[in-house]
Image (tube, rainbow, N blue to C red; front, side, top):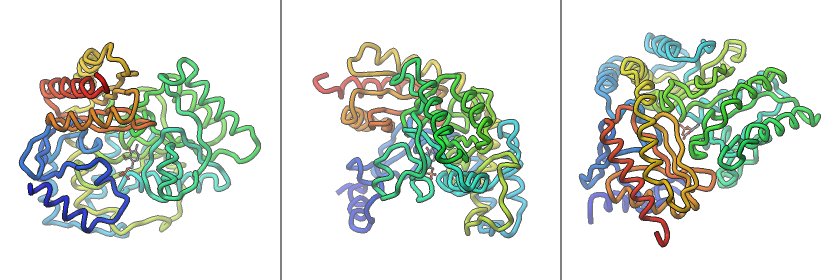
Length: 418
Ligand code: PLP
């Protein structure tokens, strides 16, 4: 029995149901990670083009983050949210240095779901009688307070949570064509005028991640901003996956010129540790003192890692790097899949790519074959039929291209009867 098999057997014996561990069997057992590489428990090295679900924005184990963690571990790790600390001030200052213009208040969180729950709770405080509208294909986390807004019904049904509010279609050019934005706006206008409930907030990802890198038309966010203003509703953007430089700007919303009222960030912001945050306008953060806390909310080890990671993001100009090397990678990916029957679309922005395939089982086979050939990618999409790439922004260009060739080859060769 290999080390990986031994570890899997131990997990199978003890792990409760419901996690993703064995959803695609056998899972890859991680042992080490550095930069954009992962090593499994049997010593096999992989090029990770998925970044651990987009966490590895600055690469795994960045020396500056490791050093910050070492230092902070010896100074102060646990620090209750009731007790301010220098590190917390530094964390807010670091966020202020990267926040979109107009967002100048910050609340810490531990996970993306927690940050979204906080934003949703703030929206409830904003207009207690109002509805919170989300979109088909959205993903905000799997906690009780967020999964109700998941655009994929199966995520809600698995946990027995009803829809948290009404849903609008997310503008999806491949599916909706030129009418994409109108379709979404018509639904929103209908909700605003049906006399049922005022709208407290609209929550969405500016580019859908779990939905499969769905990029709405350029007019969507400006029109949505105007709609929210006309309703006095908050515009909440979830940049947990689309942020931290992924799309070639620090935040995907920066491509649109729009300023949200609240914005949630997570994943890459912690440099590998569990950190998330809500950014916002002061008026949208109307909570009385002691409305919210959690024991590990301001864990100083995590926040120190985030301060270092944000420093790396800025100083290494990683958003600019995604903008600089992203398009050639996308062109290569598109070129390798051009004319392949059943490849519906290859799309992306910055260092975020998706190949939408005819069906989910093909995408699953492609992900598996790429892994056998030493490259990690992920699968997402409304119907789980999208092969998705979200590599570390520090990836050397030659490795990116070599990896893309392997992934495209795996897609071509895993096509049924292909
Ligand atoms: N929002 C988006 C857009 C995400 O992609 C994710 C996670 O994949 C979340 C929220 C949930 O974050 P977490 O898993 O840290 O709770």
